[in-house]
Length: 205
Image (cartoon, rainbow, N blue to C red; front, side, top):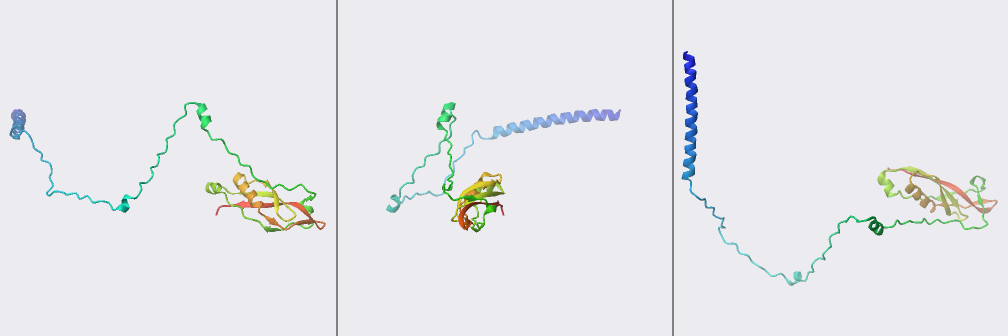
């Protein structure tokens, strides 16, 4: 019985203590608000000393300097309203025709390479320039061209005998083959034209 009575007394004591503490806290808050001044005055910051501005005239040399020209900002693309507007503003495709030096029609015969008595010997075989697009893409390959050697040893016609699979590499090989130089070919002591093959290998180092 004593334990039960003690528990009941403690529960009542805690309840009374909580209520008294809440009342005291509210009283203190009210006292603080009542005791504070009505308005807080905030004074602006003032410099300890006055700042004086001094204006100096520019020298005549600087006054003569012209202002930089104004650059117009780039115009933003505007979507076309109809398909007719797109066709009117579309740039037409430009086609480039390759200049090919064809052999002049004469009585000089073209003899197969295996039948020529005095076969042409290479003097200079220029190295083709590696196309930049193929270089950036890491494209390699081998092109074999067929060049027609004139009686003076120059190349007057070039055909692709074996493609590398890339048009830019083949075009570079054709361009280099036109600059090749050979010794003249002869058949029965007479100068003749003859087809020769030139391989070009494109490799990236």
